[in-house]
Amino acid sequence: MSFVVTENCHLCRFTDCVTVCPVDCFYGDDNQLYINPDECIDCGACEPECPVNAIYDESRIPEKLTSWIKINSEKALACKNISQKQDQLPTAESKKKELGF
Image (cartoon, rainbow, N blue to C red):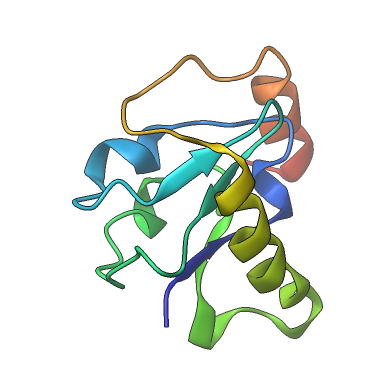
């Protein structure tokens, strides 16, 4: 099992989660982050750090978000490793507000 980044990260890309990951299993494209399930050690440190609740334990992911398990697996292989905090996207604060956080 691993943790999964879901749609709430899209157009935010807050990287608070990256700073607590002990194994650097986060990858990102221009729009969001993804977790490589083969590298994640299921420690859970990232989940509470996400300011938009985009990260779920794979075993507890809501049914409507299960497609993100496959998306993370595929996107992590195609994206650049993100191992340090970066600036959030310019759309992040408005997306956060839209999501009710």
